[in-house]
Image (tube, rainbow, N blue to C red):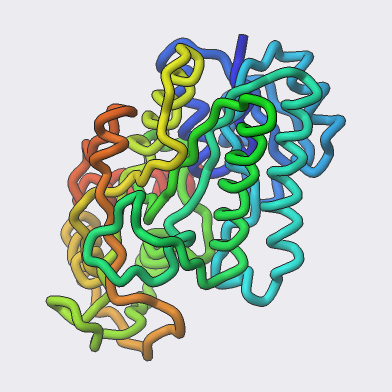
Length: 322
């Protein structure tokens, strides 16, 4: 028996694949490599190259690998770019999720852990986001993730599908030198690339109503996040009833300037960031409570900010020297 990880060749997905292996649970990866990397998937893990839009391919992968559940991560994940590419975003994230659910219905598989997002909340009007905080997405990406949650809910009503959705915040660090964040939009890789290339990293806005004027965000280590996905999969396999949604949050945010300071401490590079104007739509603060996930999924923050930076830096340097 195995779990299918869609998007398992990506930064987060590849960590989830390794988390399954650490608990001696089998998995198979489906990925079209549009943003993932084949080398991120261990050679011992079955790999199917293809899109989640191809329902027949998913049905075959499920049947050939004795799949009992799906961790669904595959999708278009760039919130800012989704504003310019709404149709592509909805096709990949909404139609893709529909295709996964259709494949599960055709094969009789009844367990799904869904990769959702903090983007479903939009700009919260509270200091600490909980699962009861209202959802007001402000991008096609955030809307597509919320629709994905609705699809699971409605399919569960119709068929008894057992599911949960995990809302991510800022996922950083690395659990292995073999995998690193290659996103062209995330803060950690942007700053690390600037350091490697001898450029000044950028801070977008230092006049927010926060302690140091820069945006405050919830940063969580990718290995901690991956472990909670496997815990969710195990709970669904054991027949445990889970909440429909969990926030994987720290409960305590960090500012962009604090991240820059940690980068300087860990890398030994004297960072002098360039202060740029605010970006439209960037809220001053998004921090979430992870209490519900701690109760049900064993979620906890196991890494300090310096450890988050150190593991990301080690993995990035390993990639450069490979």
